[in-house]
Image (cartoon, rainbow, N blue to C red; front, side):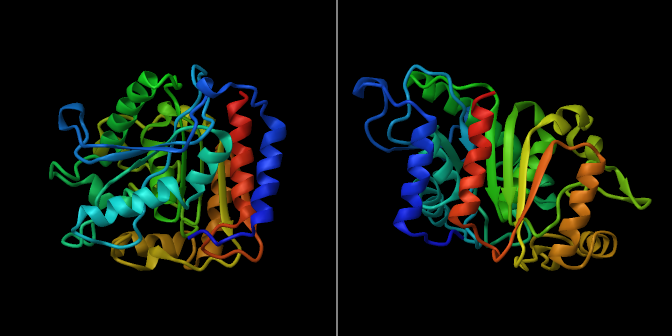
Length: 326
């Protein structure tokens, strides 16, 4: 969740960014108002679900930019896709880290409307867990590839709106969508320009097949990566991606201990090898990423739990702003 912040804090964010951008565009050079597009599923193009495009007011036209993607995270199961769409709409247009990034940097945001069915409670679609990657049903099969198909379609749509975008994208996530983002980077590093993630239970997927002589299979590591995804893990490309990874010092939200996020063997392996509490394994994962040469910056926020604040949001915005300049 995102804690409400005072109006003055938003003003300070606005003036900070205003000093970085030179908004000399005339009315016909920018979008004059916030715009929401709901794009229906296109099975013929590879995606079985809708997605949402948020184009912020003052997004420049005719200027090459980056598309930001934030996976949807309803926070609960439901067999009604309208429940997930309502949540995704709120995330895209009202309240999320991704919405703040898009609004402040004037870049488009894509939010998929992936289901999280109550009838299949162990298939944690919004975290891209192992169960969903083994799914054979047309609706849930390879959500990572469905997301790529959505991105390709969004690039075309934005081009028609005179918003040309780079092939590579920005990616952001928090909580379950932070885990989705973390795992997606391993699967498709070649399409990611930069990524930020937080609130992910302190447990990051490791760029290792084994740790302490124990096999770490997806989503814990890359042990069975080739068998599962029919391609080798592109370690070099993955390690080059600039990443901003953060946790709140008071965050005790631990999905590792629940069956919908991890099975029993995964849980035992994580608890034994990485730590049985969020903050302990967060430190271990930081150490492993650093040792393996992952291009990540880590931050732990004091007096912050399983939420973000204006200070957290500002740091994430600054991170992506720097990537815009490169």
